[in-house]
Length: 288
Image 1: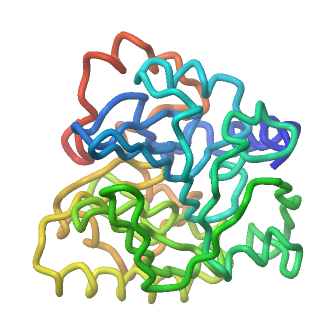
Image 2 (image 1 turned 45 degrees about the vertical axis):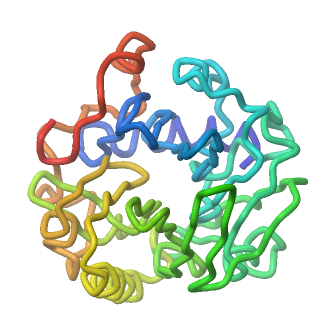
């Protein structure tokens, strides 16, 4: 989204969700030696590093503090050559917009071939049960289009692409090195476990639930430990917690779907500091 659209969403969503205890983003910092996070208001973008190569998962808002917060993690934007996009929403592609700071103008953008239809204008992104159409994302980055089940290798990093439609028609999640699943907006973690992501922002909630059920079957069949890392509510390595309410949709204006430890207004980020980013590991959902 253009910078004005990111700023508009910040103001609108802050007013809409203030006090509802829905968004509980991670702060800027490290989950472990491979995964780092930058917080942008209510959204998280992630960096995955192995053997000196770093890739980026999602590109956040069109956000003026991104370079500053990346420096807290000692990550140079110029070192990012591959960006994997889960979906095209404002808070996941803003740093690639034409009027952004163009920190990643030379990076290749990996995005699902279905999701790319939003970028070409073939389809339009709708939220609030189809009542509102989001503006087009306009980027000049080179794109690599992905299919469900495709394996991409970057250096020693193995990225498996898994299609999970519902939130958007072409939403993709990424299983990296068989150990880290970056889920974008497929899962919302409440205090008591995971649900299908926010009902008001989905193209098709029933499809989103079916995708989440299929994702759980996929992971359990592998019988391998995995960290599940979400775009707005942290991470867990407990599959039971992550999929506890997989058939239920988070309805953000219903009191049941709240997390008492979530901030009053997730768009206020005074608690996101360089000192904590450098010294405090990011604890998993349900424990922090």
